Length: 116
Image (tube, rainbow, N blue to C red; front, side, top):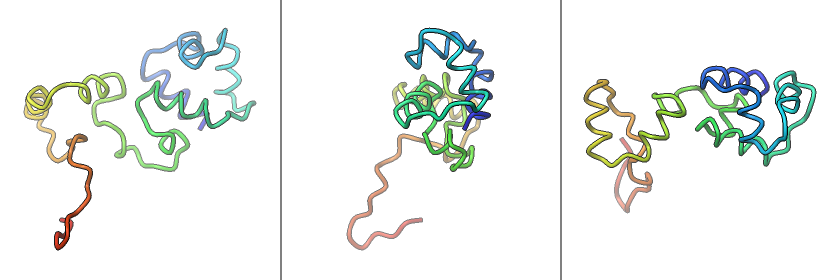
């Protein structure tokens, strides 16, 4: 958990102060303690931290593989997720990304349907 938080913070060009503010802390010392593994995070902070980085809490905890997050990175991934279908299709075509549409249907199958 702690290594993932630090790695994602660095990958997103965030300072400890930036992350502290987004997590509701008053200064960077709390983030330094989190990244150092010297505090146990409550689930509410794990969820908030996951939201900040655009990943799932399970990914942040190290339970899910990296392929379960957006292939574009957290900040760009959020913009991609918020774009309309035409923009996403254009980005997919430009980047030649196939089969990674996070906006597919809910995945429920009707009677008699089989999953692929």
